[in-house]
Image (cartoon, rainbow, N blue to C red):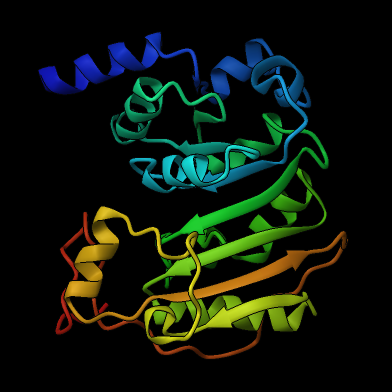
Amino acid sequence: MGKNKLQKFAEMEAFPHVFQHTSADLLQKPFEMRGQWREQFFKNDNPIVLELGCGKGEYTVALGKLYPDKNFIGIDIKGARIWTGARQSHEAAMRNVAFLRTNIEMINRFFAQGEVDEIWLTFPDPQMKKVRKRLTATNFMHLYQQIVKPNGIVHLKTDSNFMFIYTSEMVKANNFNVLFSNGDLYHSDLQDSILSIQTYYEKQWLDRGLTIKYIKFELPEKAELVEPDVEIEKDSYRSFNRNQRCNTTPN
């Protein structure tokens, strides 16, 4: 492991707003703030918003600056990535931002039923070959239902046409209430400070001519969810951090 990573991990351990837990940790001791984030950490009654797969935490930090009356928690398994947003929010003394390093599949061990108001999914891997790993698949929707308040809001912002169509069809198949949907966000008439936040990689995708898609929907209390029965054309490029996005490489 590089010296730079070791230094980042050491700093992460010292940040008071960063929480790092493995499944082994939770077997020994349940997360003590589950159901108590507002009381024990944020010290307010404001809504809690999660960014799942937050990467460097750019969106989490930007949202925290835009909305000081909401609490934001960025979640990712990669500590070296989270470090960037964790350091920025720490240096800015932001009291409404936290980071959680863990697997997304474990989030119901960190949040109680109805504790979360909104979820952001910003440019997740579309997982075109593995439905159950897709962050908008019904198994994840069921997981989110365990922590989100009734009719809480889920946002998806993506460059992937496959991910956008799949999510739209999943929402339709389960009769979720769509609040907004657009397949070419930055060429629409929508002027929204939240949606105008652009991460490092998003700017690169835009420079390469990729369109940004966005869908916002309510997640109701529902026991049974169904997968959409549709064939979706796969994206014709690969993601940054795997093989650099390219319009000519089939996936």
